[in-house]
Image (cartoon, rainbow, N blue to C red):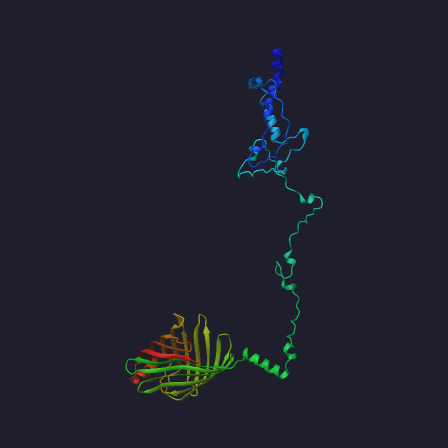
Length: 400
C-alpha cells in the first residue's frame, strides 16, 4: 500500500519543477509589474516529504531538462495558449522596458528574437500613393541662351541693323535748342575736347672739361586727340660764349594710329645761321614703351637734314625713374656755313636719373656723351673746339 502511494506521487514531483520555472518580471531592472489579484491560499500538499527524491529521478530522465526549458522559452517569447499573439508588456500600464545598452546583441538574450530587416518598401504599390515618373534628361540646347553647339553662320539671318534711335526721353522736357547744345557738349567731351600742354624734356646745366654749357629741349601743343598744333624748340650753348645752336618748329600734328602722330610744318634756325626748313616727321610709342621721334628737314637752300631720337623710362620705384636717351643727326651734304658734314654729323647718348616730386615736376642728374663725326668734327676742330665731350648734367623735367 505504501509503495502504491509513493508511485502516485512521482508525477506530482516531476511537475513541480516546471511550475517553479515561472519568470518573475518584476525582478528585471526597469520592469514594474502590477500587483496580481489576491488568490486563495493553496492547501499544503499532504505528501511534501517526497520532494527531495524528485531531483534524482528528474536527473535520471533524459526528457526532464527539456520540459522546464520549453516552459521558460514559451513564457519568454510570450507564447499564449491557443496560438495567440505574444503579449506586449510595454503597452501594459505601469510597464517600462529598459533601453538596451549600445552594442548589445539582442539576439543573444534568452527568449528575445529580433525581427528580420524589412524589405525596401515600394511606395508606388501602396494604395493611394503615386510617385512621379522619372524625369527625362533636360535638353539644355532648347533653352533660350543655352546653345550647346555653335550656331552656323549661314543660319543667322542677314538683316540690316536697326537705325539708331532719334528720339530721346529728355526731348519731352527740354527745348530743341537746349538739347542741341547738350548733345554738342557731350560729343566734345567724348572725343573733341580741346586741351593743351607745355613740357620741358631737358632743361639742364652741363659741367664738362673746359667751359661748361647748357641745353634745352621742349614742346607745347594745343588741340584734341586727333588734330593738334605743336611747337618744338631745342638748342645748346656754352657758358661765356652764348647760344651756339637754336631752332623752333611749328607743326600740324595728326593722329594716324593709336600710338602714332604724323607732323608737318616748318623749322626755323636762329644759330649758327638763319635757315628755314620744311619739316615732315612723326612721334610714336613703340612696343615696350619706347618713345621715338623722327623728322626730315629741307631748307630753303636745298639742304637736306635728318634727325631721330628715342628715350625709354626704367621705373626703379614709383617715383625714381632711370631714362636712357639717344639722338642722331644726319646731313645729305657738307655745309660749311652751318658747320655740318654729310652722313652722321653727330650723336648724343645720355643717362639721366630723375625723381618725381610730383608727376609734373622732376629734378634729375645724369651723364651725357656727345660726339661729332666726319666733316662736322673737322669743322669743330678748325674752330678750336673738341669733337667729343662728356658732361655731368643737372636739370629739371616739368610739364603743365
